[in-house]
Image 1 (cartoon, rainbow, N blue to C red):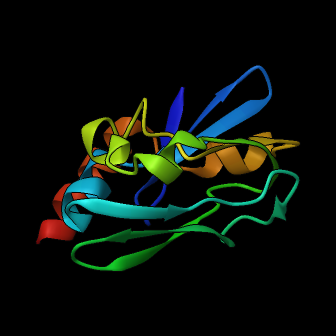
Image 2 (image 1 turned 90 degrees about the vertical axis):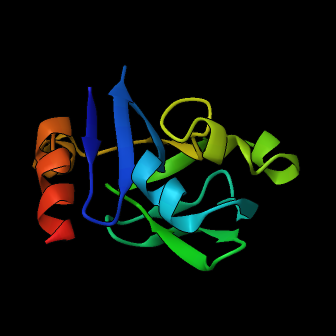
Length: 124
């Protein structure tokens, strides 16, 4: 199951490991992504901490930890091919994986339907 943040990150929890990325909406807003500064494996973040930076032809954007956790893996291919995020933001374009995550923090995030409603409200 995926959950979403108001800052347009997604997180998918499976077997105690959380995969983190940015939403398709965020990727579209950023435009062509040119660089991803990945977090270091072993780094620990609290919910809301800046976990990495994504640069595009339009802007640089901080990406926030949707929930607290410790980075167990990063998507190293993004260093050479950051455009993977543009091509597949919500699957192949994942950024990192977190362990030691809070189930309560995960449950507090938006469901897919809630996120879609949030996007509609945000357009108003």
